[in-house]
Length: 267
Image (cartoon, rainbow, N blue to C red; front, side, top):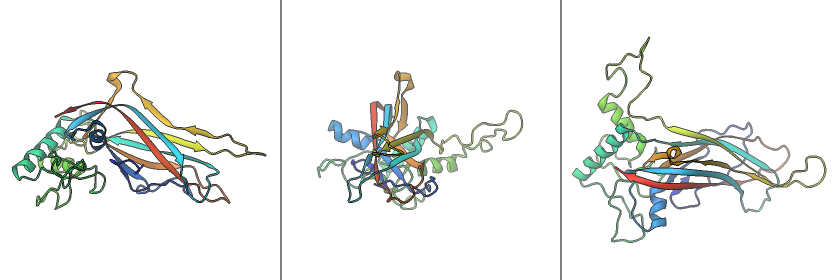
């Protein structure tokens, strides 16, 4: 995590927690498939697309430092993504139209290191300014308060200006027949829970353990099972793990995430 370009996190090493529950800010990362696939295919791929994912692999690896890893680490968390939704796509297309009108739809720098081939499409993060390479600026728009653009901002703004709540659209919110949704612009995400572990060998005596790696693997059996992520963005957060081993130095691990992209459709 945070090793590959286009895969940015706020934590590059993972260690145990005293009570086995990480704070919400401990480990948050964003995978930018549009950026990664642009570099792999040698072409500029747009975030204005639904990226089809057929495989996800999450594992742990030892960190190479001065303290040898001699214990086990198990972690768990959630993989978040925004599935295709008509109003989400409408919000992004409306934003693109606005930026084109004001001449702002150009990222601060190219996706490639080629000065005269700058990326000309809309670029946006997940929910902050520092999660992707070269996000667009909202300019002087009060909707973004001078900040760089992220998907959560866009969807929140759409909800405000269109009153996409049940009551705002005239639906009942209590009793029989009540609306089963909170907001037509889905500022909540779909998510896949995961757990992964890595066990270093313990030799001799009670508690002897062999080396064992147990990654999380999700794979679609057929095309209809593929998940679709708007903008090619996946947010990966850790929520829990094993507790500290008494009397030993904490081990350090890296998280390795592999994504199988089956294709993409622009909108």
